[in-house]
Length: 228
Image 1 (spheres, one colour):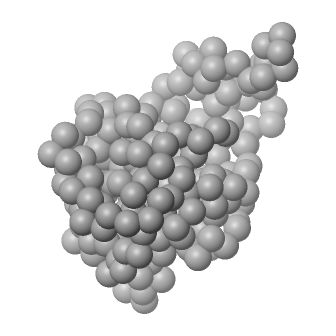
Image 2 (spheres, helix red, strand yellow):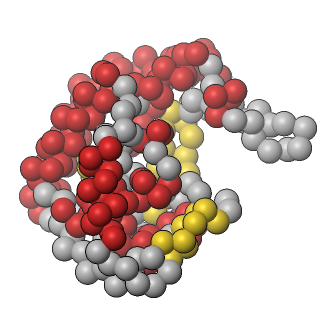
């Protein structure tokens, strides 16, 4: 990873909605538990598609930063090969996917095993997506603030552009969520997630503008972010 650009943001006292609050935790367990049961046939089908497309192993596991930057392991269905170029570097994501596994990623079926992380208490249904610890640490103070809540299966950035967003746009949306999180917002994000899966990703300029405006109210210090 290499430096992207510097942010003029620090000393933000975010009124974070606790990702470990009792009610949120209960709802996470209820929703994740129900989805695990309902999605068992879908997970079996996804595993079969991965096996036929890529072979074994079926899963990709990686250490990620959770609430308070505590490290836990995230597992997902494997959707890419480890193909590398002549220089030894991994080839672009699109080249390492098959048509079938690209569809799995588009529908987010590859992320279904993360429901177990929600049941284990390492993740929530809604929150900033979990990133490797080294990436979060590279965000500096922004990374610490981003980790005030548990990472989620889906989040504000994921329903407002996701892969169409720059790193700066993603973290602005993530921090806006941390500062404004509520059960009502979580419910809205879950509904928007379903809509995004059906209709595809789209950048919402007004929500992005709102997130940047929120961060612009705290102009001091210099924090460096890194590409994800």
